[in-house]
Length: 468
Ligand code: 6PG
Image (tube, rainbow, N blue to C red):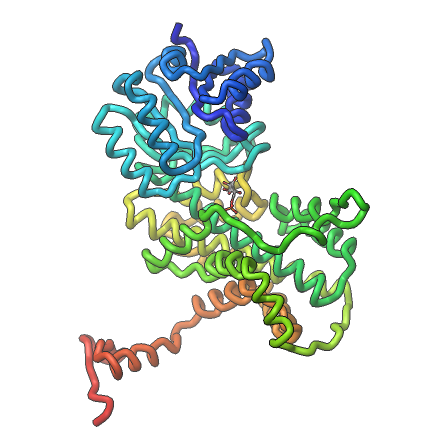
């Protein structure tokens, strides 16, 4: 009885919630998990109003799904994906589709796409953003793969995705691993924005000695301004949360920030492609810095900077911090999107950045009001090399320069680490520099390594015997 519309392998948090979301939209969905408890509890949770069948038997699972079959894997990235594919293959037919919905490194998707295409199976790598609630009620979906097969997937993905202005936050992004790559860049931007928020929080707490409630109200208020976004919103919620003893929970959470690696991948591949992402790089680095607590405790006794108590004109301080944060968040998106521009050419994804920014407007972790401004910028100029070259975005950056410069100056005086904010400003100042001092590096390289240099007043390459 192959009458089910879709199948999901892996009934953990993401798989179960996506399956229930699909069933809420009247799709008949089959679930597979080797864990009998996960399989049986899902059917109980679904109740009679949904058409759901969950099983631990691969053959029975595949047999339920109408051809061409569409089966999504929600299993941990890496070998579990390959194992899941191998367990399905004996029961699949040519024309069937497998979608990997995990945070998979894009070259793994390229390999699987090639291997499965040779067997007549269509393969997709799809970024899924929005966490548990997003999966259940409306994620942002970033599919890439075999365009021919996408029409089989479009109806169900558009039904379950988050909606903004009535438009689903999902579009076919490009061939092969395009979807995974866009999700990786999404996570790099996510790391950057989270780092910037943490730095502004630190400036309020350790720099201006503001009380916890004032800081919480600031983030809550900022979420009604141009800073409106999921990450600002949840920060306001986090800072309100009290522990069982009535104290603010945030004040007893360890400062060791972990990561599963997607931000690091973004920095690594950006360096391979020679795309500067200093704010995202700083975010990855600061997670690593947060790890070495014992050293930092020892260093705090040796490396001393005495600071004066800062004067606080609260409205002015908050306005300056808000502007600095907004400036730096704009720069962070610009860096991540510039990476996508280069990667699209390098890997032949043929990405449309108006589409990417459109589907990031809702459902995903980096969703924000400002994404509509970015969508308009790319709609206006499909060849836009960098958001900083869009007149409207450039205007917003210029009008916040005093805020970022004053904020970085304050952080320097107070001895507070604001690597993200500093790198956002440095990126801005470097990007707008017609002439950079990197000519001295060329001269040094030629001096000690005879690596040659180019000139501004003559074509060709040159070498100088510097010691003569
Ligand atoms: C999302 C998130 C998610 C991410 C986790 C862990 O878009 O829903 O980006 O995919 O993997 O939040 O991220 P880190 O452990 O790398 O911080």
